[in-house]
Image (cartoon, rainbow, N blue to C red; front, side):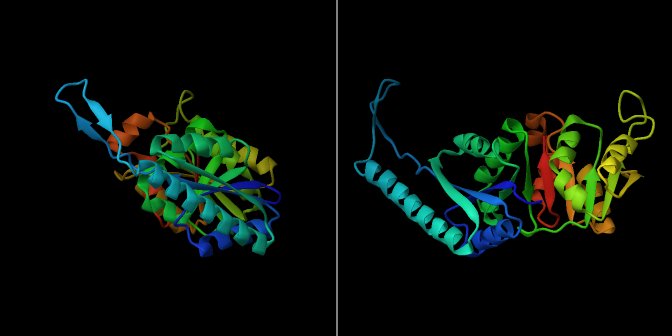
Length: 281
């Protein structure tokens, strides 16, 4: 997987060690590392006067100083990251953005559209609003996938594909093709497949297996009953049994709002931290 462009989404608290790991992994494969450094715009403290809807708003006197200090800290961190990249001799650059959480997806999407894959710094989970908005930016506004968990230089000998014949699953397999072509073994897992022409076909998984075989992948197809477990639990259990180095799956195969409110396979797989997962939509 050489000469790819990897977007590395991070924040000011992403450690030097994590950045160095990503840089070394990129240098090893002659990849270009585009570091996207995100920072939260300081919350706007406001004071109201007047007892009606037409009352005025007063900003604190030092508001502009608070914002300026935040921007200065961001500039300093950008400079530090640039120096780390220079020491690692990786082809890389740094872009920064200070924004409110709802704008994160737009900054991430803009960078991801001209990349091959997006990786999230491990500590991005510490700010869930950033983590999920960044994921939404990749999934709903770009054609690429993103990976969570696992080492930056993840080597995949065994890849587990959670396949359900959906557009999202197909997008994920396309995004994961570089991993699949390097893997020694690929399993296509169909959980509770619906064996009809309108759903998963008469022999679920064999069509994608044939396509991957043409790419030289060593592929097997397995169909698993859920046994009453939710799909996310089934994926994790069977992937661990297989000894998977990477799980590949489509994200938000159903409406995102429904999954956000009621949970869902995507949400559960995003929350788990044990298995490396490559998502696409």
